[in-house]
Image (cartoon, rainbow, N blue to C red; front, side, top):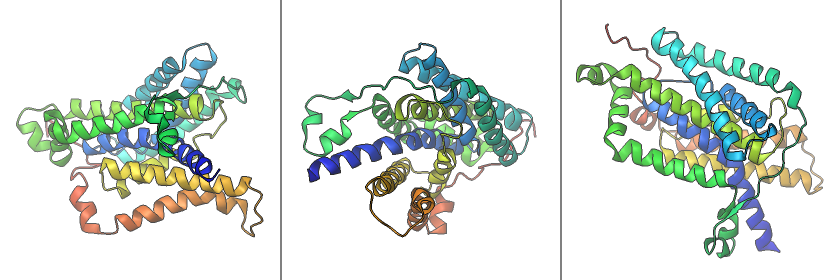
Length: 310
């Protein structure tokens, strides 16, 4: 019975951390290219409502996810046009994108409120799922959980093992130098922004199609902002982002278990609901309390506009 409880909580924590991994990996790549996009919450919301609308209209879950990816990518390219082509302030544009995306998603989603979707069955991996405790928790999961692991591996390989990953990081460190040796800095940054939008849409689609298969206004519930914080506090290192995401998921599941278990605690339920956000930020701040480490790993040109003809 105890093993079953541990397995259930681990599995739930992994699922809860998955949307954060999806969003944060895209944001990490975007920021490695020197672009600061604070609009993750809005892109997640648009991805969630677009995916839900597609699934509600009869699309399969993978196609619904693609619809969410396309919608959020389009929104990210709007941000790219404003900041990379028109040289608008990246912080202000990102905040506007977050507000706009959340509001537009609420408007589009009005006809779909409280309309449920069928549950998506988990994908069990034979042999691995038979491993005691960890097997059932890790290898009897939604397909998007495995996609998030593949995404982490792909980002690690791309950034640190591929030529274009090196070029992307060079663009984030010194766009003028990268431009001087012939690389198209603006095109590379557009690609990074579009990738960040795609993964944000993937995270939102996971929320509305797989995690809680329904649409409700505000269902993203700040996860976009948490993903942004994870990237910074994890000092732009993918594996630390994964650690932070699962920490968030674990604390969220723990507080839901406490609230649902009927334990008599003299603690407001609102404080329990806020614990995942507080715990994630506190722990990651402690991990990255060395300011020198943050400066060492932060892209040097993060948030700075670049004009090729300047």
